[in-house]
Length: 253
Image (cartoon, rainbow, N blue to C red):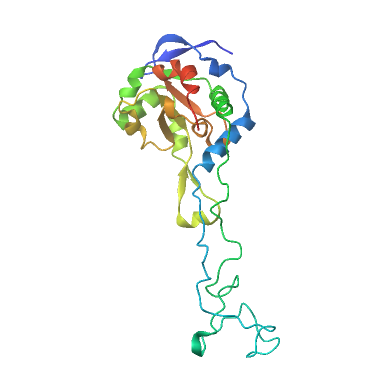
């Protein structure tokens, strides 16, 4: 493992060497990375529950085979919809699951556990592992953070020989299943840009397909390893690169 790398200018020229943070010497743990990504994705789930009295607020009474002097034996079928008779004593059976306008058989419960927890130190270890799994780090001078136009960001990526990554990010992936019917398309993840301070680059690069930009304090395992697959091409600003070891200890899911 190399102990240093070069800091590049936005035009691709070499400026100076810089020491690698200790995070790049971390052992790559694909299992730990996948677990951290799953824990992140569960935070996006929205709890849902149904009204407790759904399908129960009715004056209808069921007269079945064993509890009826009107219908007689073996004539009451619980799920058969019945039009309301005189007096309001008998109506559509809604208290029985699968009946017309009735309650669900197994409704969603608001108490259901949706979030998968992960230990804070374990999550930080997963971030270091995802950083170590990235390809040879590209470190650019902090002037990159001041780029405020999309064309300047694209020019910088081309100067760093990342044009192939940009073209890959423009490829669209069709969702499988029912979602494809809505013509929804997903851009493939190509390059991740990590900065220390946003001086305009986040707004400038957000419209480039496949390119994600974030600050070091907001970095997540899912950004470094989309879908739990480590090895994403990552571009670091010099200030963010030098503070990797000190900031990772403060990151919590």
